[in-house]
Image 1 (cartoon, rainbow, N blue to C red):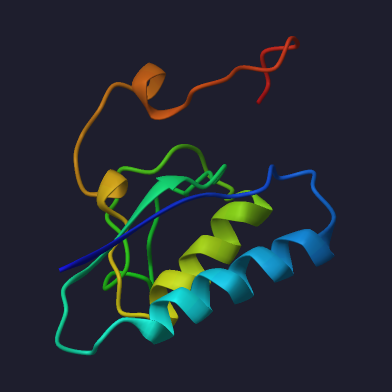
Image 2 (image 1 turned 180 degrees about the vertical axis):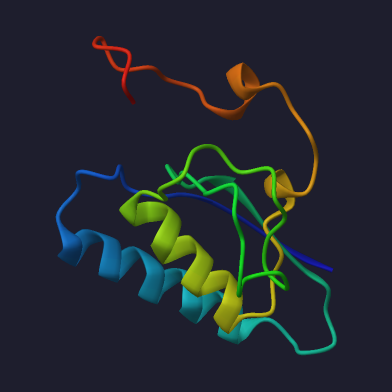
Length: 108
């Protein structure tokens, strides 16, 4: 078993920073022996949608909202490329427990 613990840049970070982050994460994944179970945990600053049409192999229906943020899209792509499942979308939680921050205006 191999476990990677990483924290992603915020959603408003420059795209170049996000690209470097996911390239580094992919390099780590590529170093793990194929026989190992792979677990990637951390805080990815990602928002996932409730609908998962076309992404059933990657995520469940317990996302938050109707639109994924940019980090959510990046993380879904990474998980798709590496045959990973986004565990937090598989289990039912109260909406208040699905996020860690609310903007001062209450919209995000």
